Image (cartoon, chains in turn yellow, red):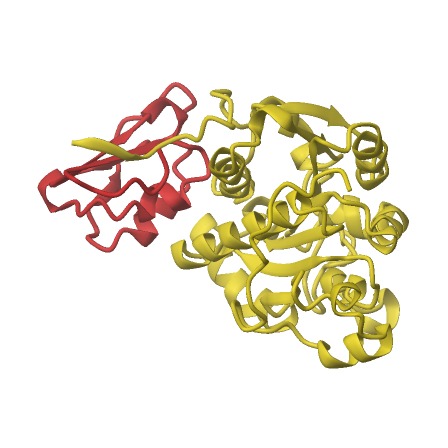
Length: 283
Length: 75
């Protein structure tokens, strides 16, 4: 018998500090598997954010830098511009990316920086104890919305992928989930496509991964996966919103036309796959 | 023929592997590990098909899967 599944080489052997059933561990492994499969571990630099994933630098077996709250895309921009031949990715939560870091992510995307962003959305501030995040769903109870989020008082949840899809900079935008093994495989394909877009020099890529927070949602890990499927996916539809082949910059289509044709995420594979041209790094 | 191994000291009893096992052969042990969690364990290993669903869903890299002539999912 031979081993068909195990810890990828791009993950260290350090036990993770995440709560039981937190899907951060799954997403870490997917990123590490993609690094292994693309053979880029030795030239990858990851940027850890602030939040539960702040210790990502302990878990990824590649060079890592830790950024201040929300500033990971700005730090990644600097590193990528100094070392254009390296693969640079950030790993950020929704409190970090969609709230305090909203300015950084929008402008990194608008500039089309050739970096990859892994955006973990669990609809709550995890590390600080379950406060309302920009991505908290309407009616969702958190410590700062004990009666549930209300549109009139708290505004509507932010859909980051759709927000960034209004810009011309991003080459790859997708939203995936990890609530069952099939979706875990789909998520891995999306993360791989995002890294491939960077390797091909296509520009900014972001994968939003819907995640759970059993501790702050007050559910068991298995119930939390069900809650994600029943509540988050209807508001945050899954799919690829932008692929390198559909990006307006490649086709020379005016920006207004491109945004009009892709208002909602397309099913996976519907918009075609990234052209497999390698070696354009550093253009 | 397939086999799964659990690094029991890393397990946090989240039961995600239990919930996705199509054969229903994973359960939590009665005893606890050094962290104080009941580690996941397989009772009837001969029923394991090596689908690696449990390992895919495990957030703590507890599970390794071995199979006869199987195609590596990720190893």
